[in-house]
Structures are given as structure tokens and as C-alpha cells.
Length: 441
Length: 112
Image (cartoon, rainbow over all chains, first blue to last red; front, side, top):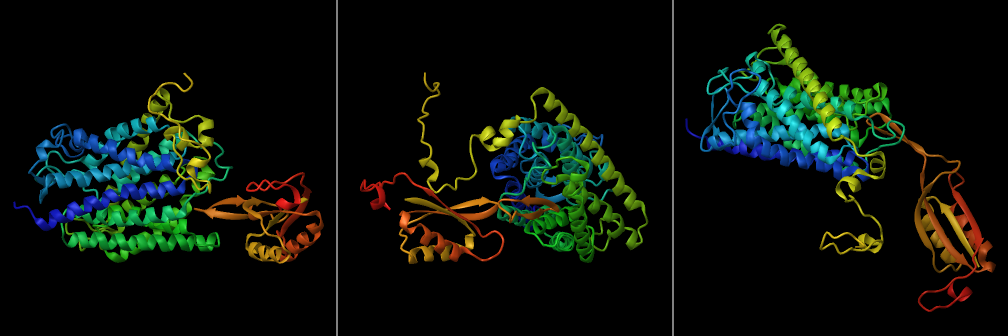
């Protein structure tokens, strides 16, 4: 098979697009927290980029896409990525793109998934503990789950190395289970382990910078086009279908979230617009390559409205999932995965299936439900254990005084903003710090 | 000498400034402030969760004047800042013991 320049360009471009979702998410999350913790919030995403990138090269790709033959864990046959040099990508068939392009495209998914979890523990997690969590979580949760769903076997479909859910024919085009349900369930588990912020829910913890949130949402949407349309792994009809559905679902989510707000609260808010876009995009992630455009609009509308309601659940149930990783990503992911049982159609994708509305019967919904339940249960349980162990061994939270004063200062010795008219230097002074000798010695 | 402090609605600052210039006040210090009196605050909604913001943005304006000018200045401020609605603010005066102009070292009324 010859390398295709068109397909390769597309996948490389989409890899870059998905990468932009990381800084996009940092801005989105960074604007949502209080000013005193915005740097820490953004750093939680940036450290994830560094850690997951290195682990992916070392063994992450191998665990996700290696061929151990058991369906649960990919094995250690392509450690270090060196064997991928100058090879074509294989994943249930050969693709005319470099294996490394496929590996880097998939890396970006791992990064964004673990970064999403950080939103549920905003303002209060020790940076070192978060770093340990990132490494443990991608190793024990993301890499295996990616193998279950995304590994279609070696150079033939359903080959010996395929994941067990992929073998059962689960429909998940770009990660409704692997990315959205996985991060959502884990976020909920971690929020339960680490506990509420000091003062929550009584003290006001409103977003400190909504323009950052809107910029972040815009970058997420932009990157999501590559996330979803790149998952076709080629510049083809399927990529256009996925891209179309991604645009439309974002629009639907935006409109329905704002509609709910206008009716329920009286005002359409900018945060509602940003949240609605994300809710729509979450729901379309598993479905974008299997459904018709009309269904993408409906799915976006349903997800936007549903998530606008579920984000309020945390106040009734009393868990501080600070930035609604559960309310948006888990709920939206479940909606998208299950919707395929109804609206999937082989007209959109001959390699897909027909849902109930297209005469396919209920078996598709059954497989989707199996995937949703197993991924949800696995990631929730394992995250509880990882979080519990880290909390016992090294402590997961900063102390109360540091949290109230501001985690940026405590964990990074920085502050995000200096708006004083006198300027940064006038109220303090630069202290010579050429050596590390004790002050006053 | 008296220090006159006025807490007013931010959108009235220009009117008050002009009124003060008209009665001969030549300098003032203005800062953004927040607080509440009978007006109380408002409610903001983020992702469906309500946040009561009870500190309302205000402008705090300070001028130092000669004893003879106190009533005229206070009257000018009140006339310019008044809307008749709740939240118009407060004006008060307190005695000032001494005042020095930093540039010249002048003291007392000369430094105003």
C-alpha cells in the first residue's frame, strides 16, 4: 500500500487541531475558576500534556494499541514508538498514513481526557499529587479503555489484538466512552475522594473571567472538528460527514442551553452559550461518523438542554464537581452513546450499523449500553482507588489556609493578575535571589 | 479644613465632577468602591446556580475644602448626584487637622 499524501496531511492537521484543545481547555477552565486559582487550573492541563506525552511514547501507545490478544490490555510490543518509524498505520486494517501520525493523533485524545478530569477538583488539589494522579490514571484507566474501544486489531478487522468492546461492535467514532464517559465518571469519583472546596456551596465561587471561557470554548470547538473528523483517519466522505455533524451538534447545544436558561432563569448567559457548545460536542463525539446531519442537530439540542439541567444536580446531591465534568461530559457522553442505538445509519457510514429508527432493531442499543455501563463502572471504580491511595500516601489537598488564600500562590508562587495602578514592582521589591542561602543568614 | 467624602453612583461621577469644578474645587481623589446600604445587591446566575452579589459598585470621591466652603461643596455634590432612587449614596464631612502640599511644603489652607 502506498502512502496517501491527502490522508496523511489530513491526519497530521487534525493532530494539531486536537492538540489545540489542551490550551483551549486550559483557558475554558482557567476562566471558570476564581482569579486566585486560575494559574493552577491551567497548569493542571499543561502538566498533563508533558506527562502523558512522555508516557505515551514509553508504553501508552503500546498498552492502547498493542496486540496482547486478551482484549483488555494491549501489551508491551511497541514500547518507545521506535518500531513505528517508516511504517503504515494499522488498526483493523491498513491505512495509507504513517503509523506515527496515527500514534500522535491518538496521543492528543489521551491528553485531553485526563485534563478534563481536573475541572472536578478545581482550586484545591496539590500539584504534585495531581501529577502522580495523571500518570497513574492514564496508565491504569485511559490506556486500557482506549484499547477496549479503539483497537480494532492488527492489519485485519477484529484481528487477535482487538479490544473486547471493539470486537462486540460498539459504535464510538471519536471517544464518547473512552474520552467523555471516562473523564466524566472519573471526575465524579475524584470529586468524592477529594471533597468540597472550603465554603462550598455557601460561598460564592463564580467564574472570574468569562471572556477566557468563551475563547476556550471557541478553541475547543475548533479543535473538536479535528478530533471528530480526523477520526476517519483519511481525507474522505466520512471525514466530511463527521465534521458536518460536529458543527451542527455544537450549534444545537448552544441554542438549547440558552433556551433553557432564558425560560428558567430569565437571561441567556455567555457561560450558557459556552457550556451548551461543549455539551453538544460531547454528545456528538461517539456519533459523528454514524448518523445523518438532522440527527446531529437533534442530538445537540437534546444534550444542551439535558446538561443545562444536570449541572444543577451537584447542589442537590452535595458533591463539589467544581466545573461540571460529571454534569457535562458524563451526561453528554451517555446521551451520545445511547442515541446511536436509535439514529445510527449505514447511509452515513457503510461500516456502521442501523439503529432502531433505521430498522436495525434493538441490538445496537444493547451493545452501546454494555459499553456505557462497563466503561463508566471501570473508570469510576479504578479512579476511586487511585485517588484514595494518593490521598493516603501523599495527601491530595492543599491545607485550608492555602486554599482560601489562593492555590496559585501556594503551589506555584505566582499570581495570575496584577491590576494595581502602582504596577507590579511598586508595592514590593525585587529581592536578589542569586543563591539559595537562607535569608538573614 | 474639612475632608468631604462622597459615596455616589458611578454613572453620576461626571456630573459631580463638573458641579465641583463649578463651585471652585480644584482637585479631588476618586476611587472605585463597593458596598451597600438600603439598596442591597442583585443576583447573578451561572450554570443555573444563583450567586447573591450584595456589594454594589460605587465611586468614592474625596475633597479637602476650607471650612467656609463646606456647605456649598456638599450641596453641589448632593444636587449633582441625586436621582431620587434608592442607592444614591452618602456625603459626609470630617475635620482635618493639617494638610501639606508635597511639592512645595506649603501647609494649611494654602495647600488645598
